[in-house]
Image (cartoon, rainbow, N blue to C red):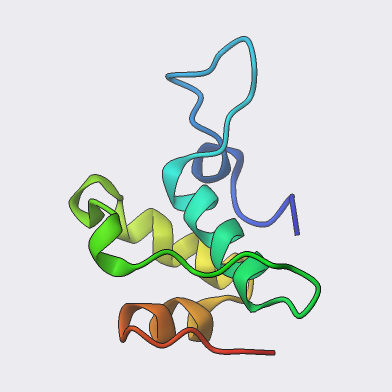
Length: 84
């Protein structure tokens, strides 16, 4: 799971050279992954709580495919997070 997608998509290398930091797109997908897990108490973020224009849609879709989260991302975009 952690290695899904290219390193450029997963990490924000421009802002976090010394300490690897997830890209905003990867962080969102990790959040959605945890929100759908029955072992997590996290809930998915509300659409209106995020500035979606700040996200790179192509990168988000590539990572969702690599992480096998296309359906979860689609459900979240429709305001319904899929459960496991």
